[in-house]
Structures are given as C-alpha cells and as structure tokens.
Amino acid sequence: MLTVLGIETSCDETAAAVVRLDENGQGEILSNIIHSQISDHEAFGGVVPEIAARAHIAILDSLIKKAMTEAGLAYDDLSAIAATAGPGLIGGVIVGLMSAKAIAMAANKPLLAINHLEGHALTARLTNKVAFPYLLLLVSGGHTQFLLVKGMGDYERLGTTIDDAIGEAFDKTAKMLGLSYPGGPAVEKAAAQGDAKAYPLPRPLLDRPGLDMSFAGLKTAVRTAALKEEPVSDLVVNNLCASFQAAVADVIGQRSARAFALFQERFPQTPAKMVIAGGVAANNAIRSRLQEVAAAHNGELVAPPHKLCTDNAAMIAWAGIEQLRHQQAQNGTIPSENGVDDDMQVSPRPRWPLDQLSQSVFGSGKKGAKV
Ligand code: KG4
Ligand code: ZN
Image (cartoon, rainbow, N blue to C red):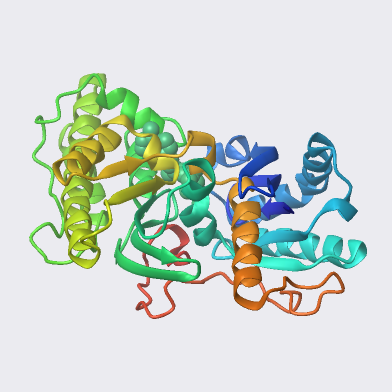
C-alpha cells in the first residue's frame, strides 16, 4: 500500500490532496482540496505571477492541513510527499516545493519532485485505468500539446502550439470582446447563441504537415474583425465567439485525426485512446469534435472528471504513486524514509519538457514558460 500527499502550486490553483494505492493496485483519492485564485486575477484578465505566488503562501499550509484531516491521516502514515517542481510560474512552484521539502524533512519522509505535465498525463490511469500506450491532448491556459504516453517516464511530444495556448486564446478573445475572465466558459456561452459561419476566420497551419498548432493569428483575426464592427453589439460578440470556437475546433479536430492515424501506425495492435486534460477540455464544441474524430478512427476519447482535468493536487500525488510503483518494479525498493535517493536536492524549474528530446519551442503557451 502506498499513500502520498500531493501539493500543486504551479499556476493559479493552490491545491493539496492525499491519494492511496491499495494492495489490489486500486487508486483512491482520500482528499482533494483546491483553492482557485480566479477572483485574485479577474481584474487583470489573466494570471499575475507575483499575486499568484503571494496567494499560494497565504493559503497553502491550511490547505495541506485540511487535506490531511479529511484523509484522516498523520504525516507518519504517508509513504512520501510529492510536489510540483515545474514547469510553471516560478514563484508559485517555489512555494509548493519548499513547503513539501519542509514537511518531508520534518516527518522524515521521501520527497518526490513531480513534473506538472506528468501529473496531467497520468491522471486517466487513476480515474479510467487507461493502460500504456495512449495519446494525450493537453489543452489549458498554459499548455497546448499532443503527447504519446508510452510508459512511466517515457513520453514523446508529437506536437505543440508554436505561440499561444488555446485557453489563452479563449481568454484573450473574451477580454477583447468585453467578456468575463476566465474567457473559455464566457466565449462558449456566447458562441452557443452565435453563427459559426458569420466570420471566415483563419485555420492557422492547417496546410502544414505534422501536429504543431498556432493560435496567435486567429486571435488577431478576431481583433481585426471586431474593430471593423465597432461599436460591437451582442450579436457581433456572439457571432465572433461562434466563429472563433469553430476555427479552434477545426484545428484541434484535424490535428487529432492526424494523432490517431500516427498512433495506429505506431501501435497497430493497440486500440487507440486519446485522453484529454486541461481546462479547455470542458468545452462542449471541442469535446464533441474530438469524439467524432475518435469514432472515425475506431478509437476512444477518454475524459477524466472535470475536477481532475484542471489543475489539482490529486494528479500530483498519483504521479508520485506511479513513480514509487515504477521504482519498486525496477529496483525492488522505494526511496527510504531517511531521504536516501529521493528528490530533496531538486530545484524548482520554470521550464521542464516531459519529452527531454523535444525541441524547445519559445513562446509556446502562456508566459512562454510551459513548453
Ligand atoms: O487547466 P486550467 O484550469 O488551468 C491552467 O491553464 O492552468 O485551464 C484554464 C483554461 C483557461 O484559459 C480557460 O479559459 C479555459 O481553460 N477554459 C475553457 C473552458 N473552460 C475553461 N476554454 C474553452 N471552453 C471552456 N468551456
Ligand atoms: Zn495544468
């Protein structure tokens, strides 16, 4: 049995959770506490790194206490402490990682430094028992990438945005059109009442091979169209949102079709599965497009519950459990309680690609840090 406390502070959610793996290999979330900082950043129309770091400091200790109390455990009952060590906003990552180091040191438990992206990548194994290999589409405010998840620690980036993350494009579009933050849900709501054919917006990079994407040009096209329509009426807003969302769905749909085809080529014997993660996965237009694409390839779209798709600490604790289980299988042991072989020496990393061989793409995603 393995029990891990997870801590997540890489962006604008402060989170702590306890997850357990029982003797039968069944994962269970014992507690999952998330505090969203949306109200702290709302006035700025996006996440302000300095405000985020301060907000993590203000609340993280009480969240950890709450997670432990809800799980009904003492630190001594834990197998390890897992914390996001990157990629993300460095101030926030420092807060979470240093808190985890302090607890690990005081409780004499191993520290596990987790890559935030690995947390997203492995969640579906906790919630839906998905077996390796599978495709992952990570679409949030900070990331937009296709990954091939081949095994523990074995990830291949198939494609990424070369500029804005999709969630960021939704947020900026909303801001331009005077809608509320976060922009995704507001744009989706407006789009439901608009005509997706009203504005012929571009589908950037669709004519290029590969799986990379671009959304900055699309965002600029929305701005240009909006400026031509000044003053912008509700009808124009609805139509622009619908046209923007349709363009995003087309890009994601075409790239996903390619991802499924590539998977089938590489793993002809394995039924193709694509797991979606990140806040944008909540978008119904995008989700139904992905479902169509999956069905057309005799594949399956796997969507973990929304609360575990967006940033949370249960995914960090689970990634810690997966690491311990992997180490156990490889070496017959896990890091010892006096910290030997654990990650205590690890530094916080603003950039930390999951696929070490992939090229760094500057400007991919919000803050340009999450590649
Ligand atoms: O994964 P997430 O909660 O956090 C980080 O990005 O760190 O994702 C938030 C992003 C925001 O950009 C938000 O606008 C977007 O996900 N989002 C959506 C929807 N709900 C949230 N985008 C499109 N449609 C939605 N329904
Ligand atoms: Zn995330």
